[in-house]
Length: 117
Image 1: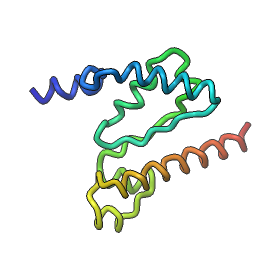
Image 2 (image 1 turned 120 degrees about the vertical axis):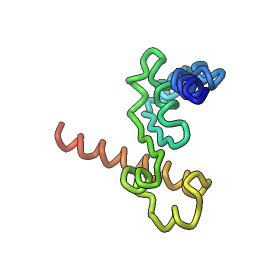
Image 3 (image 1 turned 120 degrees about the horizontal axis):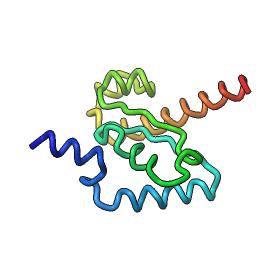
Image 4 (image 1 turned 180 degrees about the vertical axis):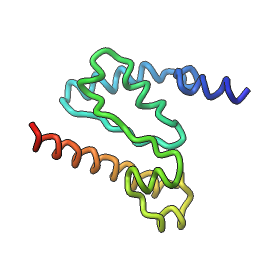
């Protein structure tokens, strides 16, 4: 049973309407000429996968981070261990911090790439 649930989460069928939302978000990002970055925990990459499906997604989806474990949260996006000790890994304060740091790390990555161009 759990195996079927996991497969549904990854193919989007467990998230009704996700493909329509992804298409809208990609279209909006493309028209605004912005790039999207995801930082996901419980969805384990399902959002980035859904955002990668619409036509032209590569023009709007920069990439993402999957931070399922506390260690990944600390190492990939820099969530302090003290914050994780004070709150649960899925607490709103941790999620906001993850999103902020994920975006900052993506911006730093772009700046590094610009130096090589």
